[in-house]
Image (cartoon, rainbow, N blue to C red; front, top):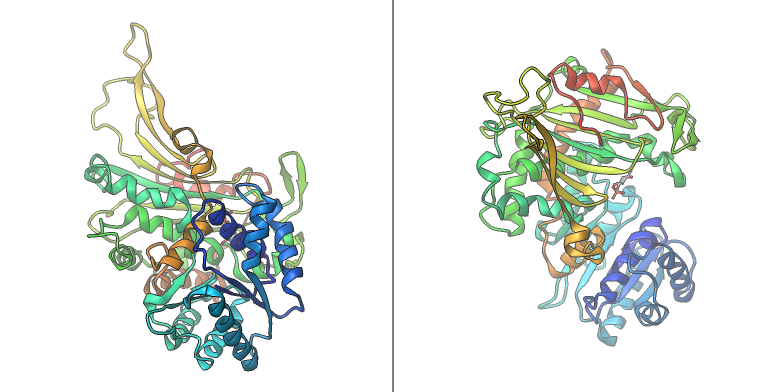
Length: 490
Ligand code: BG6
């Protein structure tokens, strides 16, 4: 495995700890060697030491010195500029040497550089002949997000990829797909007979997908974020991917293309907004202002490190999405996602229609709708809200919850990190949990219309505001209130 951009944050915080934990579970292929490819001057030893420090801090299963000592012997550092053809020749030589030491000849190239370098790395890999494996072996590429910044750049990047690798050897990361509970959406829907018959517009009133974060622009992320914004950073990929898992038709099998063919149909059925007015009516964008989070003061978005003080970039989005299919006709999907909200939590809630005839609690406000909640993180699990009779002589009912928690059913150790699953899948050649080129392009088609309305010449919808530490702007509440609905309390 060769990690391009190995001195970046992702390698130390996610990739190496993921490999270490796979090793701790005894599932790491014993022949695996990892080569960090980056521009800074480092030796194998200093690279390993840095990674060790980080692994001690973040490893899911703790850090065992003995395991690290053997695991880290498989990690190497290769210094080169990303443009430098000669650096790739030397890389080829290093990989051959490692093969001689038993690495086995397969190649996983992990692109984790700044995205500007993706095309040049692909081109240089091809020029050095590294994109083709030896007879009977494979060469694959894993590409980190962001995959383009709009449709045009995503298409250009897809062309650059296809010039070097086949789609079947291309693994576009969306780490939300690696989350245990995201994978469970398909299991819940298709391994249980009771849900699918009611999973449609006859029984479902609407769907909410909420992703709250209680962080701002820590760790120098402002520079990237202020250019991207919340819509590109979270909605185009993670949230639309979750939506596609909820909305897709049952695949005929679990092959990568079987699943992704169904998901791409969802992306193609997203109803595009007609114009800036339509966008303004259905999408809320917002920035946080000064506030308090967990008792600590927090600055506003425009005062954050590396953010333009006059920035028009959104840190929060709420959107009402319509899906033009028989199954989802008239069922809105409301998505909301933002930074500096009161806590970190992601969940999907399916709000069913009310019983057609009211028998109980007459004259009081009707809150009898069943709600199925899939908690993606934290406290992963699933709950179903139902009505129950309050004990006693009166025929009165109250909401109660049937609740499944991963931690109680499967124990704490059960939830591997998303990157662990995704790296293992990429090594074993299963691309089901990776985005295919056409999924990504169709997601951008939908997103571009909103971006263009926000940054177009005229009629730009307003930027709304919410104090840091609050649950978002009042305009997002209004988006549901006008439909007679409200956001679920998180
Ligand atoms: C990343 C985004 O893809 O996902 C970040 O770039 C965001 O802005 C992160 O914080 C959230 O991931 P998770 O797994 O912590 O929910």
